[in-house]
Image (cartoon, rainbow, N blue to C red):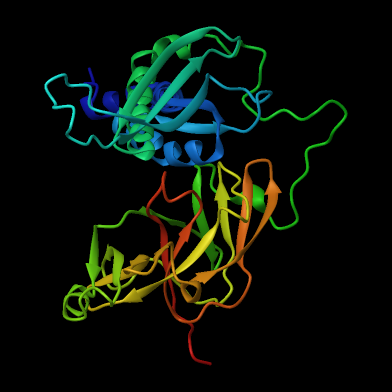
Length: 340
């Protein structure tokens, strides 16, 4: 009697169960995604988006943005943030000691199911509005992770397709510039040679000042510059176009909020002047010569393009799409125009 080969038997089992195993793996991968609708003031949402996605990724699931309430979604988040001041109420402080108010930021989030039931609420405070917003984003990611099973159990219903809806009588359209091809994850992208390049958000490594020696020698008459310092002499993304087009998915900043800032290149860092202080005046914000205006165009429900109003000279730049109070950094890139 011929013996049955264990190798052939193992191969037979693998062929028999491979489709089911792949299906289970695929189902688990698909089930690790949450469709999230975020509402709130635009700068607050912008500050929370990237932090929320990173916090979710660290916990093993992925967030896909819903654009409008009509889009299928697992959870709806309403974000708010603001700032306030408070004085020390310690009764032990002598009445003749001057007290200076302390500014702080606070933020909150309300999570709703698609049918409007409150799932959870979180709140946090911090030294700044941005710090409070980031703290709330981290808490929200944790609460969503804890509520994951509840969120995925039939809120959408079996008859709702996981595709964006269109208004009654309207036909879905694809923009001529192909904005539908932008990767689905929210963020800032640049396309070159047919490839989508995601530009990472960076924050200043430190804030320095220069001109102190001159100020001392001139008895304070010379001004002092306040600088944001970014690590590295050049950005990881180098662009060969003097008027690049950036694609932003997940948020629609206005032209008034967008800034293209030129960075001063140093040996192993890049600097941006954000203020100048002298006995006669205080100038807050970047220098005029470092700032380039932008044209913002909506090309889809949740995609806008950003194009400089004028050509960018070769060098290092920072694209800022939110208020510096909520996002002190931005998206860094370099312009390296190739010689013809």
